[in-house]
View (cartoon, helix red, strand yellow):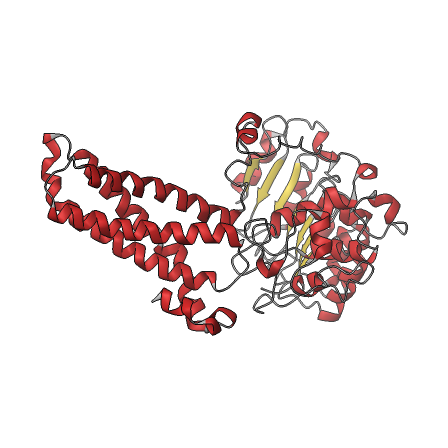
Length: 468
């Protein structure tokens, strides 16, 4: 069936959706012949010993299942190849290797069905060739999916050199100071390697686009305008990574992890700066608008709080909180930082519990008071827990009036206000929380206009406002 389509030149240029649909099943179907044929080869070997000679009667069936499933994999594989974007040489060897495996498998079926001479030379020659071709074809398929160097990417240099590959490049040292961060090597290239290269590598150039090096990125793909230095809006890369995820042109493709809002902003900024192949971030970002965002992305703004040694918590205070319905857990083995959780308690939270929590203000860094029926007045005491890094107030009827008490939480990195009554008060609160990285505002009374304002003023802040 696949050969009939191959004869039809029109389908190569514009294959019907139904053909591409069935092609997507090739990665599933292709494992069937692999399993069946390995089973057949092992059974064939086992019949050399008298103990397993009874397997001889099952050999024709094993080879037949392997042959028919190989035929199915060949047809679906051909359909998949019509979607394009694959290296032609690798595709050629993978395709014809698969066809050869299929034909030889039928041959092994016939020769096992008609001959009882297990050690016949033709039979064993075909079995050995099928085994070797199975490995070769599988390797070519892996190269199509992951790139030609995937298998040897982490191999020792002698092995790489024997395969004709260069020695491994010494990994770039992790950036420890923002001033040493290179815009391409430390930001753009790692993003591409993580989110894009699996579909745009030497073995699989989807859309004719290769994203493994700076030069390849500048060459672009079939669209011809992948990256237009200085013009992010007209760059096809930016258009595709900002499309709705359900759109056919969205990058990365379905099933792959999309770029975060922060990564999209950094890509846009890099292109606006002229898409330079190198250059220190701090020198390019003269207005310092992205300093916080880049520091956050590179993990350079880790809270120094955790370097501080805090004293052992008062066990009597801990016992009191446990008795009142709190769950108290240590967070670190070598320090006494604590997490307190009241969200699952069957007790009612009392104002006196806030006073008790204050006695652990040095140790308490995570506090979960979700669905605890807390009042705005309680937030005044919570605002005194200066070491809080993570605070969950979700599911409570707190308002903007209570938010003002949280403005002194200088170590706070995550704030959950999901399902609360807060609104524009977040605009006044966020500027005071200089370490804030993530805020949850879904199903609160915060408007979309306020969210837009927050995103414009704080591009490095992750805002969870609605379910994707």
